[in-house]
Every structure is written in structure tokens, then in C-alpha cells.
Image 1 (tube, rainbow, N blue to C red):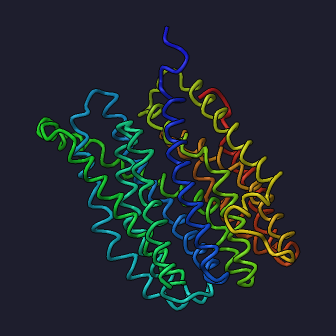
Image 2: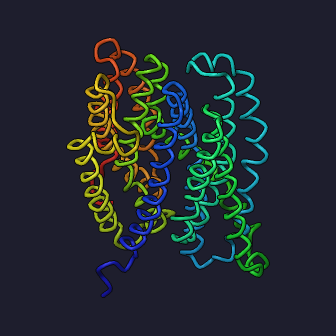
Image 3: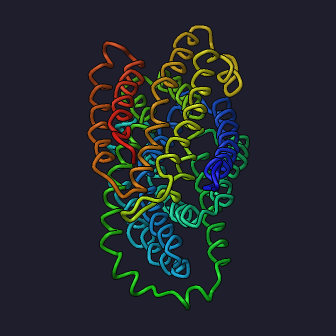
Length: 422
């Protein structure tokens, strides 16, 4: 009997971690450059805008998961010929729904958005406009994930980080020392990922489209796919706020210099702690089901949790024991008067974010099983996180955010933990 890694989980999970690590290196290099070249207030504004993009692009993962779930089931039932047609039906979503909508709404509310985050009103408009191509990027990630094309999934999406680093550095060195320059560079990187996705789509055999029974598949699964999309979107909104909204909260709640310091600490903690998150992408198509559990589901989940747990424990321990080292590597020496707060924030944020890496794995497992009762509880968890941050800010200062996040992330981990063998 095939046993050790017949599913390929460890091999594919490791491939995803390596790809994500490459992206993390580019991300660290980008923040190393931006943190040194941009003024403190501009860097704080940049990281706040990136936090908005990350938080509100999480629902785009709902499209990725919906598409990956559908494609994984098609492949499992021997109907891979329907994959190209299935993908084409989802492709118009970002084009026809969000390209005109998101920038228009952001422009209409640019003044209150700018006032809320204490930034130039053009920055929130630019940040929210980047959500549209990011959504398209998630579609191609869903195609790669469902097809279990893990080499493409691991490395192609990292192209935006390479472009952001190279182009963003060039723009800032040329004298564009504002948050807008690196945001524009990120947009160029996302467009490159979209081109790579189109290249992969063209590689699929044209004959598959002709043999596909796409019309029948479309009618029989459209309702279930829309339900899946809605529930996964709501679940990921809750997770996105927990995972990425800390810097945007700090930008609103605290002075610009404190928010800039917080942004640097949060970047260090997030880069380290969320390194094992891609293991969830490797697990998802292997346990995707339309009601019948695949063989060895429980074993796969335990193996993924152990693998992710070891990685996140090592990363968090490094931040707790040596907060000065990553700060020095990314941003240079920390000013003596700011060092105690800065290093304390690195420790507390790393500790607070650690449970969320496992929450993400459990969230993806539930969504792959087409179960949403517990994932939807992440929405009230996110609301509680925001409420606690506002209530505790006068008592704890900048530590109100990591304290609130730690309490709520542990609650979320408890809520999503398996009650019985899946």
C-alpha cells in the first residue's frame, strides 16, 4: 500500500513554501528599500495602503477557491476536458463587475477615505483600483491550484513582487519619494502575472474545449458555485481583516510617526509568521469534495497542521528572541528612543499573528469540504477585533492592536479546530 506521501502533500507543500519564500525575499527587499528611501510618514501611508489591498483582496480568494474547487472536482471525476470552458465562464467577473465599479466608488469617496487614513486622497483611490487586477490574478491562481500545477502556482504569482521591487526601487531612486510610486510598481507586477496566466491558458489543448460538455456543466453547477462563492467571500473577508488590517488600524488610531513604526514591525512579523500559509493551497485540491470525503482526509489534515505548526513556531520564536536582527536587516539601526517600542511591537505582533497561520489552513480545509458554518464565524471575530482595538487604545496604546488580535486569533483557532475526525 502506498503510504509515506502518496498524495504529494509534503512535496507540493514544500514547493509552495519555497515559492512563497522567494516572494518573501522580494517583499523584504522592497520594504528594505522603501523603509530607507521614503520618509517615515510616506512609508506609514504606503504600508497602510498595502494593508488595505491585502485585507480587501482576500475576497478575491473566494473566486480562486471557487474555481479551484470546481476544477479539482472535474479532474477527480475524469472530466478535465471541461476545465478550459469552466475557467472562461469565471473570467468575465472582474472585467464586467469590478473594473468600472471599484475605482468609481473610491473616487466618489476619496475625500473621506483620505481623511480617515490621514493621507493624500489619491492614495486610497490608487490602492482600491489595484484590487481589480489582483482579482484577475486570483482567478489564474485558482486555475493552477485546481489543476494541481503547483510549479506555476508557487512561482508565477511571485512575478509581481519581483517587478514591484525592481520598478519601485528605480522610481524611488529617481526621486519619486511618495507612496504612489511603489503602488504603481505593484500594479505593473500584477499585470505581468496576468500575462503569465494567459500564457498557461493558451497551453491547454484547444481540443479540450471542443470535447467539453460545458453547457450541461454550467447549468448543473452554477447555483452551487454561486453559493460557494458567496459564503467563501464572506469567510475570507473576516479572515482578511484579521490578517492584514492592523497597519490600516494603526494609521487611523495613532500619530504618523507611531503608525510608521508600527508598519515596520507588522511587516517583519507578517513576513515571518505567514511563511507556512501556502501549505493550505497544496492541501485544498487534495481534500476538495462535493460531499464524499476523499481517502486519508484526516491524515492529510494532521500532516499539514504539523508541517505548518513547526514552521510557524520556528518563525515566531525567531521574532520573539531576536527582534533586533530582522529590523536591522530591513530598516537599519532603530533609533535608540524608538527601539523599545519597535522591538516590543515585533514580538507582540508575531505572537498575535501566529495562530492565524493555522486558522488559514483550517479555513481552507473547511472550504474545500464545502462547509461554511464555522468559517462564517470569522466575520464576528473580525468585528470583535476592531471593537477591542478601539476600546483598548487609550489603555494600551499601539499594543492595543496586537493584544486584541491575539485574543481574537486564538478564539478563531478554537472555533475552526476539528471537533471530530473529518
